[in-house]
Length: 107
Image (tube, rainbow, N blue to C red; front, side, top):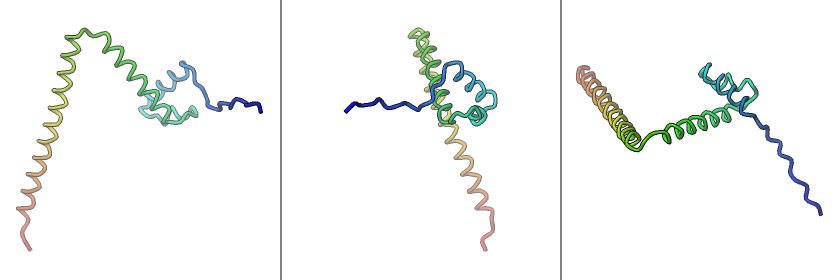
């Protein structure tokens, strides 16, 4: 028996087509607009993620070790401060809620 190779019915997209779809998605702030090109929005998300990853990797490779270390420290500090801000927001909201509850007359 001869084995016939399976036909690959997947659609392939060249780099120019991908770039245009990503440009449309960025301009309209929606992958649905780019999906009008008859592309699954999930595929556009994948292309966006791949583009961001390659750009970040290129930028990371261009940094000297001292700058890269400082960048890591600054990002960690930003994450920590964002967490602290969230905690403070929750504390303020909780305090306001307790104040509102205590001011309502008991029935």
